[in-house]
Every structure is written in structure tokens, then in C-alpha cells.
Length: 193
Ligand SMILES: Nc1nc2c(ncn2[C@@H]2O[C@H](COP(=O)(O)OP(=O)(O)OP(=O)(O)O)[C@@H](O)[C@H]2O)c(=O)[nH]1
Ligand SMILES: [Mg+2]
Image 1 (tube, rainbow, N blue to C red):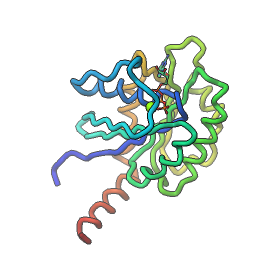
Image 2: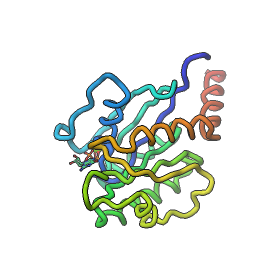
Image 3: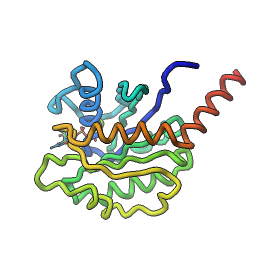
Image 4: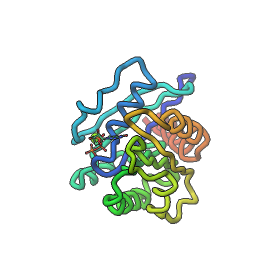
């Protein structure tokens, strides 16, 4: 009853967007553990889990592989997710279209209804990275009104924007109807078991 709320955050995005590098950076900023350095990170095939505490809440991050053949696994995690981080490589315009269609598919799925969405324009340390506003323009998402969402610029290398991202997520998840729905469902399961 009095334990800290635990929030599940799903990290999605196409391959090479920088999801695992982001997770390792979050881990190194929010725990005493050293995250893996970028040169030790390989393409994700299974699931990486990262647990951190931030603003008096427990956050559990689920990082999945973004290669085309692995994207069908994403939906298995939707039901339990409080929020989604969608990572975009802001320095690879040639992949924006793939990124946009993969995200549109995510947003159409009913198991993610109302889930807050944080879209990250990653790799801001690269000179040719475009801004968060430009990523928003490229993605040109429709019908996002029923969920809280925002675009932020980050670099998973130097840590730019990561604290701001985590703060936004915690704040929004604490107030979201989806969190309330997941809480009620967990309670109902406790009673019926
Ligand atoms: N310059 C720069 N490179 C980055 C950044 N984040 C990730 N990378 C690089 O981008 C490549 C892909 O990073 P990953 O973290 O493995 O990407 P991923 O999204 O987890 O990829 P999958 O697991 O295949 O879906 C690696 O070479 C990283 O070093 C960043 O913020 N800046
Ligand atoms: Mg990965």
C-alpha cells in the first residue's frame, strides 16, 4: 500500500535510433551503476530492462529491438506500459519515413490507448541532427489529442535533455488516466485471485 508507485516505460523506435544507448545513459545518470559505454552496445534482439528511482518513483524501462523483424514483439508489452518513449535518430533523415510509419502503427494499437508519449530527437551531439521541432514536422502525427505527448531534443552520448525527459515522464504518468486505469486493473486482479 505504501510502497512507491512503479511505472513501466516502453522504449521504442526503429533500429539504430539509439534506444539502448539512451537506456544506459539514463541508468548511469540515475543510479550508482555505470551504464554500458556506447562501444559495448550491440543491436538488441531480446529485452533490456533498466530500473531506476527518480522523483520518489520507481521507473522500469523496457528496451526492445527495432529491426523490422523484431517490431512484431513490441505489442506484447503494450498492455502493461504506463508510457512510451519513441526514439528517433535526428541525424538520419533517410530513415524518418520508416520511423514515422512504425510510430503510426504503435499509436493505432488499442492496448496503448491514452499512454503518454515522449518523442526524442536523439543524437543532438551530431552536427547534422535536426531539432525536435523539425522531427515533429517530419512525423506530422495526427489524432494525438487524447494522450499527453511532447517532443524533446536529447543526446544519449552526452546526456543532453535526459533529466528533462525523465521529469516530463514522471510528471505526466503521475497525472494520467492510463495510470489510474492500470492501478484499478491491478487491484481487480488482486481481488479475483
Ligand atoms: N552520435 C550519437 N550516436 C548515438 C547516440 N545514441 C546512439 N548512438 C549510436 O547509434 C547506434 C545505434 O545505437 P543503439 O543504442 O544500439 O540503437 P538501438 O535503437 O538500441 O538499436 P536496436 O537495438 O537495433 O533497435 C550506435 O552506433 C550508437 O553508438 C547519440 O546520442 N549520439
Ligand atoms: Mg537496442
